[in-house]
Amino acid sequence: MKILLSYFFFAFCFLIPSGAKLKNVPNILLITADDLGWNSLGCTGNSLTGISPHLDKLAREGILIENCHIATPICGPSRFALYTGQFPHRTGYLGHGQQPPRWWHEFNRNPVKKSITSVLHDFGYLTGLIGKHGTDWCSFSTSPAGSNEDTGMGRNPEKYFTFAREFMDQAKKENKPFFLSANAHDPHRFWARHRDETNAWIKAMMGPVQWRPLENGKPYPDPLTQFDPKDCPIPASYPEIPFLRNELAKYYDSVNRMDQVVGKLLHALEETGLDQSTVVIFLSDHGLAWDMSKWSLYPAGTKTPLIIRWPDKIESAQYNRKSLVSVVDLAPTVAEICGLPPMEGVDGKSFLSLLCEEGSLWERTEAFSCFNYMNNDAERDRTIASYSPDLYKTEEQYRPSRALTSIDFNYIWNGWSDGNASLPRSMLGEFANFLRTNSEGSEQYTDRLNFITHRIGEELYDLRKDPGCLNNLADKKNSSHVLKEFRTKMVNFLGKTQDHELGNYLTFLGTRPESINLSE
Ligand SMILES: [Ca+2]
Image 1 (tube, rainbow, N blue to C red):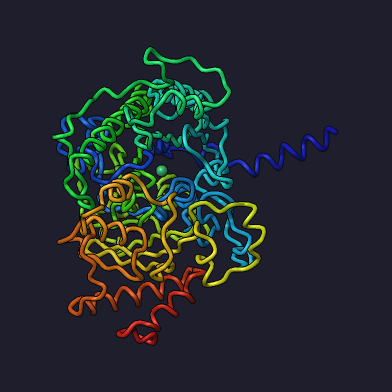
Image 2 (tube, helix red, strand yellow; image 1 turned 60 degrees about the vertical axis):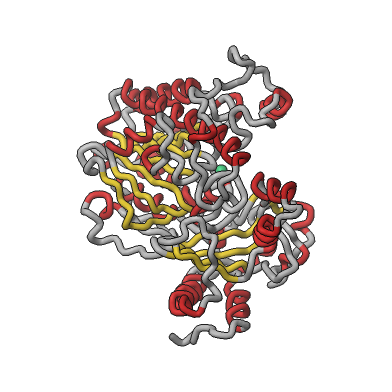
Protein backbone atom coordinates (compact mmCIF):
# COMPACT_ATOMS: atom_id res chain seq x y z
CA MET A 1 0.00 0.00 0.00
CA LYS A 2 2.81 2.36 0.99
CA ILE A 3 4.59 1.63 -2.30
CA LEU A 4 1.36 2.28 -4.18
CA LEU A 5 0.84 5.62 -2.43
CA SER A 6 4.42 6.60 -3.19
CA TYR A 7 3.83 5.75 -6.83
CA PHE A 8 0.74 7.96 -6.99
CA PHE A 9 2.58 10.78 -5.23
CA PHE A 10 5.47 10.47 -7.71
CA ALA A 11 3.08 10.41 -10.70
CA PHE A 12 1.16 13.38 -9.31
CA CYS A 13 4.36 15.46 -9.11
CA PHE A 14 4.93 14.95 -12.81
CA LEU A 15 1.34 15.72 -13.78
CA ILE A 16 1.14 19.08 -12.00
CA PRO A 17 3.54 21.73 -13.24
CA SER A 18 5.97 23.08 -10.70
CA GLY A 19 5.30 26.34 -8.86
CA ALA A 20 8.17 27.93 -10.75
CA LYS A 21 6.42 27.27 -14.06
CA LEU A 22 3.33 29.08 -12.83
CA LYS A 23 5.16 32.13 -11.51
CA ASN A 24 4.13 35.48 -12.95
CA VAL A 25 1.32 34.11 -15.10
CA PRO A 26 -1.83 36.25 -15.10
CA ASN A 27 -5.30 35.28 -13.92
CA ILE A 28 -8.09 35.25 -16.48
CA LEU A 29 -11.58 36.61 -15.83
CA LEU A 30 -13.70 35.76 -18.87
CA ILE A 31 -17.08 37.50 -18.83
CA THR A 32 -19.81 36.77 -21.38
CA ALA A 33 -23.17 38.36 -22.09
CA ASP A 34 -26.07 36.34 -23.49
CA ASP A 35 -27.72 37.51 -26.74
CA LEU A 36 -26.18 41.00 -26.77
CA GLY A 37 -26.33 43.02 -30.00
CA TRP A 38 -22.84 44.24 -30.89
CA ASN A 39 -23.76 47.94 -30.88
CA SER A 40 -25.95 47.94 -27.77
CA LEU A 41 -23.23 49.25 -25.43
CA GLY A 42 -22.26 52.85 -24.84
CA CYS A 43 -18.69 52.07 -25.90
CA THR A 44 -19.90 50.64 -29.25
CA GLY A 45 -22.07 53.64 -30.08
CA ASN A 46 -25.37 53.31 -28.21
CA SER A 47 -26.49 56.85 -27.40
CA LEU A 48 -28.58 55.90 -24.31
CA THR A 49 -27.01 57.64 -21.32
CA GLY A 50 -25.85 55.29 -18.58
CA ILE A 51 -26.60 52.00 -20.36
CA SER A 52 -23.23 50.34 -19.74
CA PRO A 53 -20.95 52.41 -17.47
CA HIS A 54 -18.85 49.47 -16.26
CA LEU A 55 -18.14 48.05 -19.71
CA ASP A 56 -17.46 51.54 -21.07
CA LYS A 57 -14.86 52.03 -18.33
CA LEU A 58 -13.37 48.58 -18.99
CA ALA A 59 -13.02 49.49 -22.67
CA ARG A 60 -11.29 52.75 -21.75
CA GLU A 61 -8.82 50.81 -19.62
CA GLY A 62 -7.99 48.30 -22.35
CA ILE A 63 -8.67 47.49 -26.01
CA LEU A 64 -12.05 47.18 -27.72
CA ILE A 65 -11.99 45.12 -30.90
CA GLU A 66 -15.19 45.94 -32.76
CA ASN A 67 -15.05 43.08 -35.24
CA CYS A 68 -15.04 39.76 -33.41
CA HIS A 69 -17.29 37.08 -34.93
CA ILE A 70 -18.72 34.12 -33.09
CA ALA A 71 -18.80 30.65 -34.68
CA THR A 72 -22.54 29.93 -34.59
CA PRO A 73 -25.38 32.15 -33.36
CA ILE A 74 -26.99 30.02 -30.65
CA CYS A 75 -25.93 29.76 -27.00
CA GLY A 76 -24.45 26.33 -26.24
CA PRO A 77 -22.72 25.61 -29.58
CA SER A 78 -21.30 29.16 -29.66
CA ARG A 79 -19.78 28.69 -26.22
CA PHE A 80 -18.46 25.25 -27.23
CA ALA A 81 -16.46 26.92 -30.01
CA LEU A 82 -15.28 29.66 -27.65
CA TYR A 83 -13.87 27.17 -25.13
CA THR A 84 -12.42 24.69 -27.63
CA GLY A 85 -11.13 27.03 -30.36
CA GLN A 86 -12.75 24.68 -32.92
CA PHE A 87 -15.65 25.16 -35.34
CA PRO A 88 -18.89 23.21 -34.80
CA HIS A 89 -18.48 20.87 -37.79
CA ARG A 90 -15.11 19.76 -36.37
CA THR A 91 -16.28 19.06 -32.81
CA GLY A 92 -19.71 17.74 -33.78
CA TYR A 93 -21.53 20.20 -31.51
CA LEU A 94 -23.71 21.48 -34.31
CA GLY A 95 -26.67 22.82 -32.36
CA HIS A 96 -28.93 22.15 -29.41
CA GLY A 97 -30.37 18.75 -28.51
CA GLN A 98 -28.66 15.48 -29.42
CA GLN A 99 -25.04 16.37 -30.30
CA PRO A 100 -23.04 15.23 -32.11
CA PRO A 101 -25.75 13.86 -34.40
CA ARG A 102 -25.41 10.16 -35.14
CA TRP A 103 -24.52 10.77 -38.80
CA TRP A 104 -21.64 13.10 -37.86
CA HIS A 105 -19.59 10.14 -36.58
CA GLU A 106 -19.31 8.70 -40.10
CA PHE A 107 -16.85 11.51 -40.92
CA ASN A 108 -14.23 10.12 -38.47
CA ARG A 109 -12.80 13.47 -37.47
CA ASN A 110 -11.35 12.60 -34.03
CA PRO A 111 -11.07 16.14 -32.70
CA VAL A 112 -8.76 16.96 -29.81
CA LYS A 113 -11.21 16.89 -26.90
CA LYS A 114 -9.71 19.75 -24.95
CA SER A 115 -10.77 23.25 -24.07
CA ILE A 116 -9.00 26.29 -22.66
CA THR A 117 -10.36 25.37 -19.22
CA SER A 118 -8.97 21.84 -19.36
CA VAL A 119 -5.49 22.86 -20.52
CA LEU A 120 -5.29 25.61 -17.89
CA HIS A 121 -6.58 23.19 -15.25
CA ASP A 122 -3.89 20.66 -16.20
CA PHE A 123 -1.31 23.43 -16.09
CA GLY A 124 -2.19 24.16 -12.45
CA TYR A 125 -4.79 26.94 -12.73
CA LEU A 126 -7.79 27.02 -10.43
CA THR A 127 -10.67 26.96 -12.93
CA GLY A 128 -14.27 27.91 -12.21
CA LEU A 129 -17.58 28.86 -13.78
CA ILE A 130 -20.70 30.78 -12.86
CA GLY A 131 -23.80 31.06 -15.06
CA LYS A 132 -24.42 29.61 -18.50
CA HIS A 133 -22.61 27.02 -19.13
CA GLY A 134 -19.52 24.90 -19.77
CA THR A 135 -19.11 22.00 -22.18
CA ASP A 136 -18.38 18.30 -21.92
CA TRP A 137 -14.78 19.15 -22.69
CA CYS A 138 -14.31 21.69 -19.88
CA SER A 139 -12.55 20.97 -16.58
CA PHE A 140 -13.41 23.01 -13.52
CA SER A 141 -11.59 22.80 -10.18
CA THR A 142 -14.72 23.78 -8.25
CA SER A 143 -18.35 22.84 -8.86
CA PRO A 144 -19.74 25.15 -11.57
CA ALA A 145 -22.38 27.52 -10.21
CA GLY A 146 -24.63 26.96 -13.17
CA SER A 147 -28.15 26.61 -11.80
CA ASN A 148 -30.77 29.35 -11.85
CA GLU A 149 -30.73 29.27 -8.06
CA ASP A 150 -26.93 29.86 -8.02
CA THR A 151 -27.21 32.97 -10.17
CA GLY A 152 -30.74 34.32 -9.67
CA MET A 153 -31.50 33.18 -13.23
CA GLY A 154 -28.21 34.77 -14.29
CA ARG A 155 -29.55 38.23 -13.43
CA ASN A 156 -28.64 38.80 -9.80
CA PRO A 157 -25.43 40.88 -9.62
CA GLU A 158 -24.95 40.17 -5.88
CA LYS A 159 -24.84 36.41 -6.48
CA TYR A 160 -22.08 36.90 -9.05
CA PHE A 161 -20.16 39.10 -6.62
CA THR A 162 -20.35 36.56 -3.78
CA PHE A 163 -19.30 33.62 -5.97
CA ALA A 164 -16.45 35.55 -7.63
CA ARG A 165 -15.15 36.88 -4.31
CA GLU A 166 -15.08 33.39 -2.76
CA PHE A 167 -13.48 31.87 -5.85
CA MET A 168 -10.76 34.53 -6.01
CA ASP A 169 -10.10 34.18 -2.26
CA GLN A 170 -9.69 30.43 -2.78
CA ALA A 171 -7.13 31.05 -5.54
CA LYS A 172 -5.19 33.36 -3.24
CA LYS A 173 -5.32 30.85 -0.41
CA GLU A 174 -4.09 28.02 -2.64
CA ASN A 175 -1.51 30.34 -4.20
CA LYS A 176 -2.72 29.46 -7.70
CA PRO A 177 -3.53 31.59 -10.72
CA PHE A 178 -7.20 31.39 -11.68
CA PHE A 179 -9.42 31.17 -14.74
CA LEU A 180 -12.99 32.21 -13.97
CA SER A 181 -15.69 32.07 -16.64
CA ALA A 182 -18.52 34.33 -15.45
CA ASN A 183 -21.58 34.37 -17.66
CA ALA A 184 -24.50 36.78 -17.27
CA HIS A 185 -27.83 35.59 -18.71
CA ASP A 186 -28.94 39.12 -19.59
CA PRO A 187 -30.04 40.38 -22.06
CA HIS A 188 -31.50 36.98 -23.04
CA ARG A 189 -35.29 36.87 -23.31
CA PHE A 190 -37.55 37.33 -21.52
CA TRP A 191 -36.30 40.79 -20.91
CA ALA A 192 -37.02 42.87 -17.85
CA ARG A 193 -40.66 44.00 -17.88
CA HIS A 194 -41.36 41.95 -21.03
CA ARG A 195 -44.99 40.87 -21.18
CA ASP A 196 -43.88 37.23 -20.89
CA GLU A 197 -41.71 37.84 -17.82
CA THR A 198 -44.53 36.48 -15.65
CA ASN A 199 -44.48 34.89 -12.20
CA ALA A 200 -45.44 31.56 -13.78
CA TRP A 201 -42.48 31.76 -16.17
CA ILE A 202 -40.06 32.60 -13.33
CA LYS A 203 -41.45 29.74 -11.26
CA ALA A 204 -41.01 27.32 -14.15
CA MET A 205 -37.45 28.52 -14.77
CA MET A 206 -36.47 28.15 -11.10
CA GLY A 207 -37.89 24.63 -10.92
CA PRO A 208 -38.75 22.80 -7.71
CA VAL A 209 -35.92 24.25 -5.57
CA GLN A 210 -36.68 26.57 -2.64
CA TRP A 211 -35.58 30.11 -3.38
CA ARG A 212 -35.96 33.37 -1.53
CA PRO A 213 -37.55 36.15 -3.58
CA LEU A 214 -36.25 39.72 -3.44
CA GLU A 215 -38.62 42.59 -2.60
CA ASN A 216 -39.92 42.60 -6.19
CA GLY A 217 -40.95 38.95 -5.80
CA LYS A 218 -38.29 37.76 -8.26
CA PRO A 219 -34.95 35.98 -7.73
CA TYR A 220 -33.23 38.99 -9.32
CA PRO A 221 -33.58 42.77 -9.11
CA ASP A 222 -35.22 44.90 -11.77
CA PRO A 223 -32.77 46.94 -13.87
CA LEU A 224 -31.72 50.35 -12.57
CA THR A 225 -32.69 52.00 -15.85
CA GLN A 226 -36.09 52.46 -17.44
CA PHE A 227 -35.31 53.90 -20.83
CA ASP A 228 -37.85 55.96 -22.70
CA PRO A 229 -38.72 54.12 -25.95
CA LYS A 230 -38.43 57.33 -27.95
CA ASP A 231 -34.71 57.52 -27.09
CA CYS A 232 -33.96 53.91 -28.00
CA PRO A 233 -31.96 53.21 -31.16
CA ILE A 234 -33.22 50.56 -33.58
CA PRO A 235 -30.48 48.33 -35.10
CA ALA A 236 -30.00 48.80 -38.85
CA SER A 237 -31.61 45.41 -39.69
CA TYR A 238 -35.06 46.63 -38.63
CA PRO A 239 -37.47 49.37 -39.72
CA GLU A 240 -38.20 52.44 -37.61
CA ILE A 241 -41.46 51.27 -36.03
CA PRO A 242 -42.77 52.40 -32.59
CA PHE A 243 -43.65 48.80 -31.62
CA LEU A 244 -40.04 47.72 -32.09
CA ARG A 245 -38.77 50.73 -30.15
CA ASN A 246 -41.05 49.80 -27.21
CA GLU A 247 -39.75 46.24 -27.20
CA LEU A 248 -36.14 47.37 -27.48
CA ALA A 249 -36.50 49.73 -24.48
CA LYS A 250 -36.99 46.65 -22.28
CA TYR A 251 -34.07 44.89 -23.94
CA TYR A 252 -31.82 47.89 -23.28
CA ASP A 253 -32.86 47.86 -19.60
CA SER A 254 -31.69 44.24 -19.48
CA VAL A 255 -28.40 45.25 -21.12
CA ASN A 256 -27.99 47.65 -18.19
CA ARG A 257 -28.54 44.84 -15.67
CA MET A 258 -25.92 42.73 -17.48
CA ASP A 259 -23.54 45.67 -17.09
CA GLN A 260 -24.26 45.66 -13.34
CA VAL A 261 -23.16 42.01 -13.21
CA VAL A 262 -19.93 43.05 -14.93
CA GLY A 263 -19.51 45.86 -12.39
CA LYS A 264 -19.90 43.44 -9.48
CA LEU A 265 -17.38 40.99 -10.94
CA LEU A 266 -14.82 43.78 -11.40
CA HIS A 267 -15.53 44.99 -7.88
CA ALA A 268 -14.76 41.50 -6.51
CA LEU A 269 -11.49 41.58 -8.44
CA GLU A 270 -10.54 44.96 -6.95
CA GLU A 271 -11.45 43.89 -3.41
CA THR A 272 -9.18 40.85 -3.61
CA GLY A 273 -6.35 43.06 -4.92
CA LEU A 274 -5.93 40.86 -7.98
CA ASP A 275 -7.03 43.41 -10.58
CA GLN A 276 -3.48 44.29 -11.64
CA SER A 277 -2.54 40.65 -12.25
CA THR A 278 -5.74 39.65 -14.07
CA VAL A 279 -6.62 39.78 -17.75
CA VAL A 280 -10.31 40.64 -18.10
CA ILE A 281 -12.01 39.55 -21.32
CA PHE A 282 -15.60 40.42 -22.29
CA LEU A 283 -17.71 39.30 -25.26
CA SER A 284 -21.21 38.07 -26.12
CA ASP A 285 -22.16 34.58 -27.32
CA HIS A 286 -24.04 36.14 -30.31
CA GLY A 287 -26.49 38.92 -31.18
CA LEU A 288 -29.90 40.15 -30.07
CA ALA A 289 -32.64 37.50 -29.75
CA TRP A 290 -34.67 38.54 -32.81
CA ASP A 291 -34.78 36.93 -36.22
CA MET A 292 -32.25 38.53 -38.61
CA SER A 293 -29.90 38.71 -35.57
CA LYS A 294 -29.79 35.57 -33.39
CA TRP A 295 -30.02 32.37 -35.51
CA SER A 296 -28.69 34.34 -38.51
CA LEU A 297 -25.24 34.84 -40.05
CA TYR A 298 -25.53 38.58 -40.62
CA PRO A 299 -23.20 40.69 -38.44
CA ALA A 300 -26.25 41.44 -36.24
CA GLY A 301 -26.08 37.74 -35.30
CA THR A 302 -22.37 36.93 -35.42
CA LYS A 303 -20.55 40.11 -34.45
CA THR A 304 -19.64 40.90 -30.85
CA PRO A 305 -17.47 43.56 -29.32
CA LEU A 306 -14.41 42.02 -27.67
CA ILE A 307 -12.98 44.00 -24.76
CA ILE A 308 -9.67 42.99 -23.17
CA ARG A 309 -7.97 44.71 -20.23
CA TRP A 310 -4.48 43.66 -19.16
CA PRO A 311 -2.85 46.27 -16.92
CA ASP A 312 0.66 47.32 -17.96
CA LYS A 313 0.60 44.99 -21.00
CA ILE A 314 -2.18 46.35 -23.21
CA GLU A 315 -2.25 50.07 -23.85
CA SER A 316 -5.48 51.67 -22.64
CA ALA A 317 -8.22 53.39 -24.66
CA GLN A 318 -7.66 51.49 -27.92
CA TYR A 319 -10.73 51.26 -30.17
CA ASN A 320 -9.83 48.87 -32.97
CA ARG A 321 -12.20 48.97 -35.98
CA LYS A 322 -9.71 47.71 -38.56
CA SER A 323 -8.80 44.24 -37.29
CA LEU A 324 -10.96 41.16 -37.41
CA VAL A 325 -10.86 38.15 -35.11
CA SER A 326 -12.88 34.96 -34.78
CA VAL A 327 -14.02 33.55 -31.48
CA VAL A 328 -11.97 30.41 -32.21
CA ASP A 329 -8.89 32.64 -31.88
CA LEU A 330 -9.67 33.36 -28.25
CA ALA A 331 -8.68 30.04 -26.61
CA PRO A 332 -5.23 29.94 -28.33
CA THR A 333 -4.72 33.60 -27.37
CA VAL A 334 -5.49 32.90 -23.70
CA ALA A 335 -3.11 29.91 -23.84
CA GLU A 336 -0.31 32.16 -25.09
CA ILE A 337 -1.10 34.90 -22.54
CA CYS A 338 -0.81 32.26 -19.79
CA GLY A 339 2.51 30.94 -21.09
CA LEU A 340 1.16 27.56 -22.25
CA PRO A 341 2.39 25.70 -25.31
CA PRO A 342 0.11 26.26 -28.38
CA MET A 343 -3.21 24.40 -28.07
CA GLU A 344 -3.43 21.31 -30.26
CA GLY A 345 -6.11 20.82 -32.90
CA VAL A 346 -7.60 24.32 -32.80
CA ASP A 347 -8.97 26.21 -35.82
CA GLY A 348 -7.97 29.61 -34.44
CA LYS A 349 -4.69 31.43 -33.96
CA SER A 350 -3.39 33.52 -31.08
CA PHE A 351 -3.88 37.26 -31.70
CA LEU A 352 -1.61 38.33 -28.84
CA SER A 353 0.46 40.36 -31.32
CA LEU A 354 -2.66 42.43 -32.08
CA LEU A 355 -3.03 43.26 -28.40
CA CYS A 356 0.56 44.08 -27.56
CA GLU A 357 2.44 44.83 -30.79
CA GLU A 358 0.08 47.16 -32.63
CA GLY A 359 -1.24 44.33 -34.77
CA SER A 360 1.76 44.17 -37.06
CA LEU A 361 1.64 40.37 -37.29
CA TRP A 362 -2.12 39.85 -37.37
CA GLU A 363 -3.47 39.10 -40.82
CA ARG A 364 -6.99 37.59 -40.52
CA THR A 365 -9.19 39.06 -43.24
CA GLU A 366 -12.38 36.96 -42.89
CA ALA A 367 -14.19 35.20 -40.07
CA PHE A 368 -16.20 32.03 -40.68
CA SER A 369 -19.58 31.47 -39.03
CA CYS A 370 -22.13 28.74 -39.60
CA PHE A 371 -25.54 27.39 -38.73
CA ASN A 372 -26.43 23.70 -38.61
CA TYR A 373 -29.07 22.50 -36.16
CA MET A 374 -31.50 24.44 -34.07
CA ASN A 375 -32.55 21.47 -31.94
CA ASN A 376 -31.75 17.88 -32.89
CA ASP A 377 -34.34 15.57 -31.38
CA ALA A 378 -32.71 12.47 -29.83
CA GLU A 379 -35.41 10.06 -30.98
CA ARG A 380 -35.37 11.26 -34.56
CA ASP A 381 -31.57 11.24 -34.48
CA ARG A 382 -31.56 7.49 -33.87
CA THR A 383 -33.37 7.03 -37.19
CA ILE A 384 -30.83 9.00 -39.27
CA ALA A 385 -27.87 6.70 -39.83
CA SER A 386 -26.00 8.75 -42.39
CA TYR A 387 -25.70 12.24 -43.76
CA SER A 388 -27.36 13.14 -47.02
CA PRO A 389 -27.33 16.46 -48.90
CA ASP A 390 -31.10 16.78 -48.62
CA LEU A 391 -31.27 16.20 -44.87
CA TYR A 392 -32.94 19.61 -44.51
CA LYS A 393 -35.94 18.35 -46.50
CA THR A 394 -36.97 15.92 -43.76
CA GLU A 395 -35.46 17.69 -40.74
CA GLU A 396 -36.83 21.19 -40.36
CA GLN A 397 -34.45 21.78 -37.42
CA TYR A 398 -31.44 21.28 -39.75
CA ARG A 399 -30.83 24.48 -41.70
CA PRO A 400 -27.20 24.52 -42.91
CA SER A 401 -25.80 27.97 -43.72
CA ARG A 402 -22.21 29.16 -44.02
CA ALA A 403 -20.79 32.69 -43.92
CA LEU A 404 -17.53 34.50 -44.41
CA THR A 405 -17.46 38.05 -43.11
CA SER A 406 -14.74 40.62 -43.70
CA ILE A 407 -14.64 44.18 -42.42
CA ASP A 408 -16.38 45.35 -45.61
CA PHE A 409 -18.51 42.40 -46.79
CA ASN A 410 -20.79 39.65 -45.50
CA TYR A 411 -21.16 36.56 -47.75
CA ILE A 412 -23.69 33.84 -46.88
CA TRP A 413 -24.63 30.53 -48.50
CA ASN A 414 -27.92 29.00 -47.36
CA GLY A 415 -27.66 25.31 -48.20
CA TRP A 416 -31.31 24.66 -47.31
CA SER A 417 -32.89 27.51 -49.26
CA ASP A 418 -34.57 25.94 -52.30
CA GLY A 419 -37.62 28.19 -52.61
CA ASN A 420 -39.84 25.75 -50.69
CA ALA A 421 -38.12 25.02 -47.38
CA SER A 422 -38.71 27.52 -44.59
CA LEU A 423 -37.20 28.30 -41.22
CA PRO A 424 -38.93 26.63 -38.25
CA ARG A 425 -40.75 28.82 -35.74
CA SER A 426 -37.90 28.21 -33.28
CA MET A 427 -35.61 30.27 -35.55
CA LEU A 428 -38.05 33.13 -35.98
CA GLY A 429 -38.61 35.80 -33.35
CA GLU A 430 -40.64 38.84 -32.50
CA PHE A 431 -39.83 40.75 -35.67
CA ALA A 432 -41.23 37.93 -37.83
CA ASN A 433 -44.27 37.80 -35.53
CA PHE A 434 -44.76 41.52 -35.97
CA LEU A 435 -44.56 41.21 -39.76
CA ARG A 436 -46.96 38.25 -39.75
CA THR A 437 -49.63 40.07 -37.76
CA ASN A 438 -49.28 43.32 -39.69
CA SER A 439 -48.60 42.13 -43.23
CA GLU A 440 -52.20 42.26 -44.47
CA GLY A 441 -52.32 44.99 -47.09
CA SER A 442 -48.60 45.70 -46.84
CA GLU A 443 -46.58 44.38 -49.76
CA GLN A 444 -43.39 45.57 -48.07
CA TYR A 445 -44.06 43.55 -44.89
CA THR A 446 -45.19 40.50 -46.87
CA ASP A 447 -42.02 40.55 -48.99
CA ARG A 448 -39.82 40.93 -45.93
CA LEU A 449 -41.54 38.09 -44.11
CA ASN A 450 -41.18 35.86 -47.17
CA PHE A 451 -37.50 36.63 -47.39
CA ILE A 452 -36.90 36.03 -43.68
CA THR A 453 -38.79 32.73 -43.77
CA HIS A 454 -37.36 31.29 -47.00
CA ARG A 455 -34.10 33.23 -47.50
CA ILE A 456 -32.24 32.73 -50.78
CA GLY A 457 -29.32 30.53 -51.85
CA GLU A 458 -26.65 33.17 -51.76
CA GLU A 459 -26.35 36.58 -50.12
CA LEU A 460 -23.70 39.29 -50.35
CA TYR A 461 -23.80 42.63 -48.53
CA ASP A 462 -21.56 45.68 -48.64
CA LEU A 463 -21.34 46.49 -44.95
CA ARG A 464 -19.85 49.92 -45.61
CA LYS A 465 -23.09 51.09 -47.25
CA ASP A 466 -25.57 48.57 -45.89
CA PRO A 467 -24.82 47.60 -42.26
CA GLY A 468 -28.31 46.13 -41.79
CA CYS A 469 -27.85 43.71 -44.74
CA LEU A 470 -31.00 44.79 -46.58
CA ASN A 471 -29.66 45.02 -50.15
CA ASN A 472 -28.48 41.64 -51.46
CA LEU A 473 -25.75 42.11 -54.09
CA ALA A 474 -25.24 38.41 -54.91
CA ASP A 475 -27.04 38.68 -58.26
CA LYS A 476 -25.78 42.17 -59.15
CA LYS A 477 -23.40 42.16 -62.10
CA ASN A 478 -21.08 44.83 -60.74
CA SER A 479 -20.47 42.78 -57.58
CA SER A 480 -19.53 39.58 -59.40
CA HIS A 481 -15.78 39.96 -58.77
CA VAL A 482 -16.35 40.23 -55.00
CA LEU A 483 -18.76 37.29 -55.16
CA LYS A 484 -16.19 35.15 -56.97
CA GLU A 485 -13.53 35.97 -54.41
CA PHE A 486 -15.79 34.91 -51.55
CA ARG A 487 -16.89 31.73 -53.33
CA THR A 488 -13.27 30.74 -53.85
CA LYS A 489 -12.41 31.46 -50.23
CA MET A 490 -15.45 29.52 -49.05
CA VAL A 491 -14.53 26.45 -51.13
CA ASN A 492 -11.00 26.56 -49.75
CA PHE A 493 -12.16 27.02 -46.17
CA LEU A 494 -14.78 24.25 -46.24
CA GLY A 495 -12.21 21.93 -47.84
CA LYS A 496 -9.49 22.76 -45.33
CA THR A 497 -11.76 22.19 -42.33
CA GLN A 498 -13.48 19.12 -43.87
CA ASP A 499 -16.95 20.62 -43.63
CA HIS A 500 -19.64 18.03 -44.34
CA GLU A 501 -21.51 20.62 -46.46
CA LEU A 502 -18.64 21.12 -48.96
CA GLY A 503 -20.15 18.76 -51.55
CA ASN A 504 -23.49 20.52 -51.28
CA TYR A 505 -21.83 23.88 -51.74
CA LEU A 506 -19.97 22.72 -54.84
CA THR A 507 -23.22 21.37 -56.28
CA PHE A 508 -24.84 24.74 -55.62
CA LEU A 509 -21.98 26.60 -57.33
CA GLY A 510 -22.32 24.30 -60.31
CA THR A 511 -25.86 25.60 -60.84
CA ARG A 512 -24.85 29.26 -60.93
CA PRO A 513 -24.47 30.99 -64.29
CA GLU A 514 -21.18 32.72 -63.42
CA SER A 515 -19.48 30.27 -61.16
CA ILE A 516 -15.85 30.13 -60.17
CA ASN A 517 -13.11 28.22 -61.84
CA LEU A 518 -12.23 25.76 -59.09
CA SER A 519 -8.65 25.47 -60.28
CA GLU A 520 -8.13 29.20 -59.50
CA1 LIG B 1 -27.12 33.19 -26.11
